[in-house]
Length: 204
Image (tube, rainbow, N blue to C red; front, side):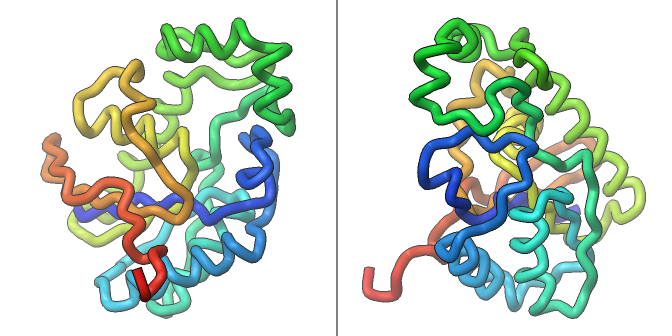
């Protein structure tokens, strides 16, 4: 299976440094433009199925891609971003002041982190892996696009590369990026990571 992992385009909360998690924040104008450029870059790719988080920022990004391929977007709530509990909606500057102990735990031992009122990182990884396994069981030899979120994609990449979740921050997942993985039984071959060439202006 050829799996393309796509992160949604930019939102106002991305731009202003607010913690989104499962809050259903729409794409802003920059994010829509990013999604359109991303979709155009995939226009000539063979895509058999598109799956997306059911959050609107991912759904709209997926719909832009689907528009070039005349296929439907399949929504899954197990592709949602990490539920960040009490941190949802807070500015990162506020989180640093009020929840510095959570950030310290995140930096030092993310594998055991349980966000207050939210999910654990390991729980996010497991539900994401279960979602991919379910998709593979239906379409194991086809070309699949999955549109999701920063933490979901990052934890999947850790698993696919045999890395612990302590390495999560090594995997940058930019808005409207794409990462391509070829999957053969239990072997994962990374073709590209965090590709954002399509977002660069034509005069660069």
